[in-house]
Length: 221
Image (cartoon, rainbow, N blue to C red; front, side):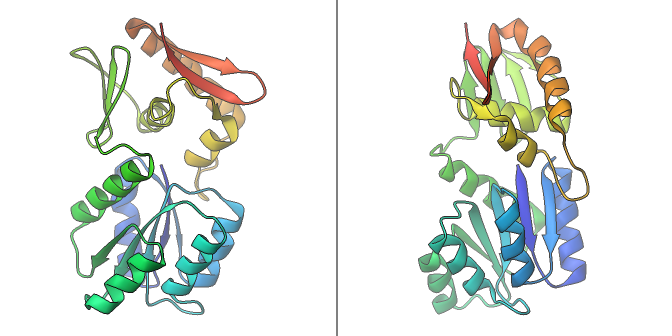
């Protein structure tokens, strides 16, 4: 999952970014609303962690711009104010959830997982395709009762494919989800990870099919 973090406090920005990266997520961090809009104009994100008290353009204005321009990323608002009018305004503007400061990183991560599951139309943390099951919280992949070890990027790729079984996931979408500004992911790297996963998933009778000119799809035999 690729996350945009919009927070002007340096210490908080660094701490949140490290917590998200520890989950195996790709994180881009910006310091104000103008940078946030520029980032989403050129990159594709699964979710955003958005502070309200931002320089140049405030969080409400950024959120309103995203929603009126069809940006469908999940949005978790952060703010120092826990007043009801602000919470209601954020939710009415199109935010998916609201987290007042101070907060624990574990709660932020749990809320991000929950809102991205809802965006996918899946309330469960378990993705199942044939004999495979992937827990989006623990990042564990199992074939029946046997655990199949995955690297963080392999887990990210498995989650993308298992979230839409039988449907081609565009290669561009895979590249975007597994990239960040500090770590660019190439088309050749995608092919290498697909090859590794094909070998691991063969034991479960699940195949990664190449859809020519589009990307890859997961199919159970």
